[in-house]
Length: 251
Image 1 (cartoon, rainbow, N blue to C red):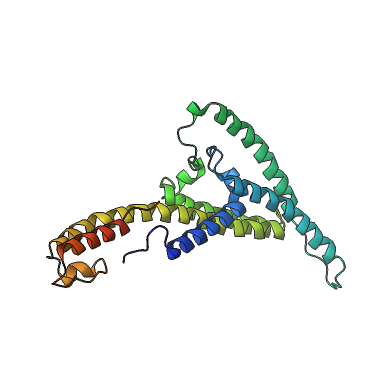
Image 2 (cartoon, rainbow, N blue to C red; image 1 turned 90 degrees about the vertical axis):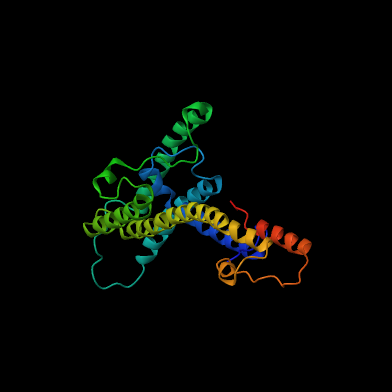
C-alpha cells in the first residue's frame, strides 16, 4: 500500500507516537541499561532520556518513602511481611554512582573521538548471554534475553526478600520497557530495509505503467488503479513521476 509522503499527517502522527513510546521506554529502562550495556557510546542516550531518567530516579525514592510512611497509619491487624534488604532508594543510589562512573568514561571519549567507532552503538552484550543459544545474536538478545533475565531476577530476588516489593515492581516494568525499546529499534531498521526493497520491486511496475503495459494484477501489488486508455502521454508521465516520489525512502 502506498504510504503518505514524509510530511503527511498520518506519517507525522505515527512518527510522533513512536518517538514518544521510545522516549518513555528509554527513560524507564536507562538505569538497567547502565548495568547491561556498560560500553555504550557517547550518544547512545539522548539528552531528554538522561534528564527524564534523573528526574525519575529522584522521584521514585521519595514516592516509596511517602508510601511507606502512609502505610503505618493504616489499621492493619496482622503482622507486616518482612521487607527486602535493598529498596528503590538503594537502586537509586547505585544509579547515580553508575552515572558518575560513566560520565568520566564518556567525557574521555568525547575528548578523544578517535577512540570511538560509532557514538550511538550500545556496545556488546554481557558475556553472560553467550551461554544462551541465541545470546550471540544481536536483536534476540536485546529484545528477549535481557528483559527475561531482568524479569526472572526481579521475581526471584523478591521471593527471597533480597529486594523490596517496590524495587521488584520497578524492575519488572523496566524489563518490559527495555524489550519494547529494543523492538522499536529493530522495527525501524527492518522498515528502512523493507521500504528499500518495496521501491526496487515497484520500479518495474511503474515502468510498465509509463508504457501502458501494466496489468491489473501488477497494479494490485502496489494498490494502484490503471490509467484511462485515452489519457495523454504527458499527463501519464507526470503522474508516474509523482507516484515515484511517494515511494522514496524515508528515514
